[in-house]
Structures are given as C-alpha cells and as structure tokens.
Image (cartoon, rainbow, N blue to C red; front, top):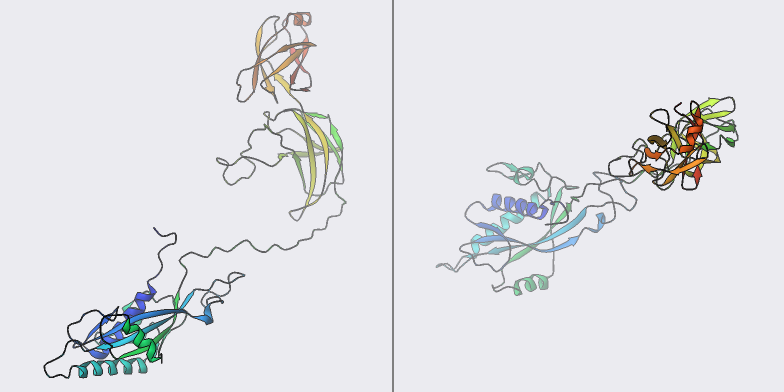
Length: 399
C-alpha cells in the first residue's frame, strides 16, 4: 500500500489523447498502439513509444499559476516534458511488395493532424466521428497548468537507431515528438502553517499590580482569604500555582480533557474588596504545601503586568456528622488531606485513616478520651498532613 493517496494517471491520459488523434487521422485500416517498439504485429500499424521523461525546468521552482503562492519555499507541481517516438510499422511482407505505402500514408496523415493541432485544451476536438474532445477522451488531464503542446522533436539519428537497436526488430521509420507541459498535482492536501505572529502593544493606565500579602496566610477549601493588592486594572486574573499531586481540572479549557491532563495554574474567582481581592480555593483535593498566588492585569487580551505573593494551602476539618463523644470512632469531612496524617482535638492528636484512599475527602478517627472535658461545649479540631497543620474548626462535643 502506498504511503500517499492515489495520484492521477496523467501519463495514461496523454497516451489516450495521442491515440485518439492518430485514430482520427488514419481511420480503421491501420492499427494504432502504444508501447515497446519490437512487439510482433499483423498488418500495418502506427506506434507511440514513450521513451523519455524529462523535468520541465521552467516550472520546477515556482508555484502553480492555478493556486498562487502558498508556502515560503514554494509548492510546485511535478512538471514534466514527455518524449515520444511515433513509428510506422508496415507489418509482414505483402505479395506485391509495396507494404510501406499504407504505413507512410498513415504516418503523413498523423503528422499533419499534429501540425494543425499542436495545442490541445480540454475542449479541443481530437476525434471527428464520434466527435470527442480532450475532456471526453480522458479526465486525467483536468488539473494541467496549461494546454498540452505537441511539437516535433529533431532528435539525432543516433538516438533513434539506438532505441531501435535495443529491440529485436529491424529499424522502422520514426518521428520524435515532445509533449509539454505535463503536470502531476500533489495528492497530499496543502495544510498551511500557523500565521506569522505580529507584535501587539497594549497601554494601560497603571504600572501593574502590587501584591502586599495574603490574609490569612493559609488557604483552605471553603475559607475565603484576601489578597492585599494595589494597582489593579479594569481586567485582572488571579491564579494559584499547581503542585505535584493536585487533581485534574476538566474546566481549564483543554481540547480533550478525557485524554490530556492539566498542567497550568488554578484560576481563582476574585471579588474586589476595599483591601484587594477576596479569593477561595477551587478544589478541596489540592495537596497541602507552599504555593504562589499571582495577580495579572489584562489589557486587550494580553498580560500587562503581574505580581505574586506566597501562600500555604493547609489541610482542614470541614465538618463532623454530629456531636463528638469520647472514645467514639467518627468520620470527618476534610480538605487537602494526604493519605497519612493526624487530627488534633484541643491539642490531643490521634492518627486518622482515609475512608477513600484514592481521593481523601473523609477520614475516620477515634475521638480521644480527653475530649470529655469539653462536654457541652466545642473543641477545636485541626488537621495535620505531611508537614502542614491547618486552621482549627470548632466541633460540638456531646454533653
């Protein structure tokens, strides 16, 4: 199987046109063939033999006039000049010994037709009965750059005798012709490259944002924080850096979220406040640790200044199913938890076990007996994952 799509049979199309012209000139009494010179025949015939294919130099390094300029190095078609030998073969010796008369008459008639019709466009008539044009005879020449031009080629006698000498039959009277311009269009569709990029400048009435910090300095899911920032433009973008272990984000604009994974930062929803911008963590499965919050001013769709500040994503206890009881095993809803860690109840730390290890959204933990001292009140529960401890969450303790 070819690595390229099927190409038009242009050479066969040229053969078909030459055969139609020759048959129209000689009628039905003389055979018309194509192919090698030394094949046996019965009776008089004319034979077209394509013996050489040469490049058409004029079109080797230029675009096709039909399509115009499409690529920097050019995309020229395969441009060829075909060299044919038209031979008159009288066949076997006749009883009267004048077998050449019919061959010479057929050759003369064909040369005259080619002399009168040297330029063949798709609508040129090549057969009178029935009336056929080039387009009727073959569809393989529809993509030619210009009409076919058939000219007699005064090749040296040595060339003709050398061609006949390669076969097993005796020399026959022959005339050489050139057929041009024959072009073969590429079967591969042209795919233009990306547009040349242009420099675009944007002007904004600000030197850009200046981030003074984040308060509180730890971010957790469901706990808004304020980015202290000045110098904001009309359009801003707030992002949080991505860390190894973060979940995929199917809303980040990737063309195929099912097969590719997020690599860019998290985009935070920002609400203006008197001090700056109020933001929230977009996903409770972000891994805990140090990150960077970046505020970028956008002007005409382009970044026009940015500043960053450090922040820590901290694990947190979100809720409990009910009041805690000393010694009870309880399942807590959590955020930013790793598979291993501890829960602190008023300073009493106990290890937890993930309920769903693949995505730690809940953990199971045994409430320490010391929580009984908080009966009827609340105890501050905090989560520790890795080396990061989160903010306290008040949980009710049974009375």
